[in-house]
Image (tube, rainbow, N blue to C red; front, side, top):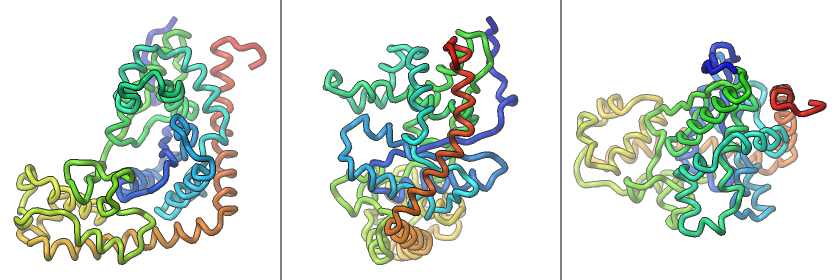
Length: 344
């Protein structure tokens, strides 16, 4: 059997990423994922983006809420600039090749690998015996999500990097076990000034839809007045902004607001501080509020329009699933052949 690592240059450059439709899209989702997805769409590379609804049900989801949240996430993708004519956009459960390949990977991956996953430990906690088998096997399905398209790059947050590394391990073991160079060793891509957006009330905590305070986050469904009000009331310290990034080191709230400004403006922290260093927050926060409204209010308006047209969203997702299966079906068929399935 061949033990050579796969040569990713032999694979069509292709980006895949997904977000769970668990409801409550925030500025963190927009800056940490959606703007990155749109940026990849502008490059000379095929892009595939997915509402991972199968992952969502690893914990209980109320069915009507899941349907609504899947459509809302699709609306958020589109309103943020993803063009279904240029990127493939679909929900995971419409492409059965994901779960079919996931079973193969369940038989390749090892229990010890899954038990080491930080998210499994965090989500299952001390009550792991009552957690779903799906939650435990989540990383194998994620590997299938990626590798059923032979994706070479996956834009992810830092919290998902370990799962992409596991995807590489699964690909390498499959290739080694069957003596093939069939699956690429996918690269996780983590980039951008505001990849991790923090709470507006506590700069040491990630912005989250589960925070009990709505003032801790900007929701993509917030209107212009609400966005501006939340920025104006964001927690800060009494000192003016520093003139360089080193001055933000022990100031989490200030660093968070500067990062948000940099990401929304398409610049970097140094650029923001070059323009606003020395300003008190009474001057900087109105500027950030104006920029936030300029960038986000059109998104919330378009999301609201799309959510009033669920048939339009469903048609886009259905067409995207058809495009996705054109890529996924041959990969699954060849996988079955390699494994030895009769009639594959």
